[in-house]
Length: 91
Image (cartoon, rainbow, N blue to C red; front, side):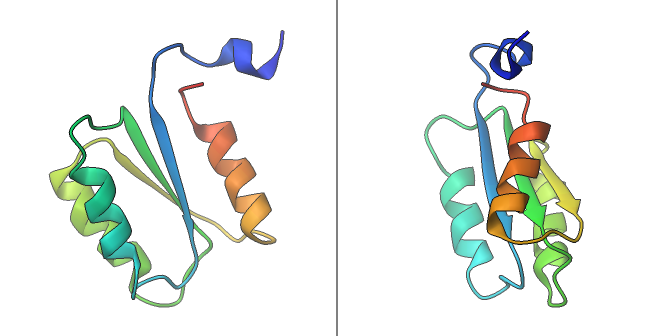
């Protein structure tokens, strides 16, 4: 079975990878959360930020149930994006 075969058809997954992004994360999340068509899931992959990144995401999670947060150490942007892709339900 191919990796893409295990994903659900017609599910929109958006992934944002972030590390210490408190200065720009709100603008990114506002853009995603105010689209005409909302995603089925919005995954925030946080590289264990030391700033207010996780707190900002949790604020949005209270209002938008499709937002999910994963905080974990990674080895860089590519590792974080690969984690997001593996967690995404959509294809």
